[in-house]
Image 1 (cartoon, rainbow, N blue to C red):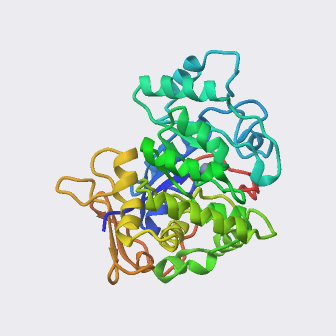
Image 2 (cartoon, rainbow, N blue to C red):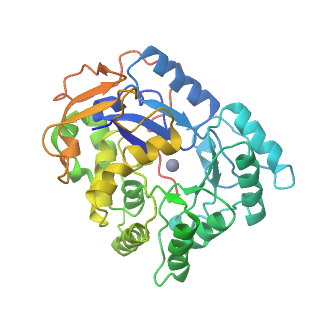
Length: 369
Ligand SMILES: [Zn+2]
């Protein structure tokens, strides 16, 4: 099969060099800062068989809003926020000049975490989309409630970085499914992260070679969920929302939001595959969601496909991939035509030499909305 693509990650030093060991040969970074990305870049140079990656950079957030709490938590250095009275186009241009490969806009109202957070208004979202589209870049919204999702899709975003978590009898969620389908917006449900945020873990879904490759520290991380009390009703509503998107023919992409609490870089993409299937996606659509769909949306030159003259990122699966968890039975992983040489039956430990002096505080992944 083509190498797997994780369409929603947050890269830190130590990630890109480990991902191919889990069959993940390309990753889309959905938010990061220049210092962290410099470190990731150095790691890619130091480890030539690292996963391919690209990043949204810091995207568009407003003062006091998500994800600016991550500065205070010490996870990222200070990064610019949009001044609502300033020029949106200039802000977007500055992000593109900084290296953003697409624009992320943060519309996290905080409801899921029981908070009220400021978000960019509809005019700003529209202006961001216009400015980014003018430069030929896509816009992806972080939003976790249906009302915010409607603001995003009605004002021009190309994709949603998460499934929303519908409330009980949430008419806006039904409307959102319709509008997403009508406008051709793609969705990266990140079910493995949302279930963790709702207190439901899926570490038991690690299997085969992948299960053996998760080391002790990351096993502990898999058990450390986004919250301690489970909300199975909200989780069921979220799964139903994703099933309705699939029925409506919406393009879904497999992404994990690693390393959100409970989510392991590389390994959890296989759990996401299983969760997408549990929402009723046909297996062919799931396999597309984890290979060619994100490959062609975010990368060029045949990433996520097996084509003559392509990138040569290949995953060899022991068995028939037309079977639920077979993606986890890795026999071999090939990056750019070179076999990733590592003992597939051993846990993946951190690289001996970190590629950068940037070290994230420990524990680096705190609970956040
Ligand atoms: Zn994310």
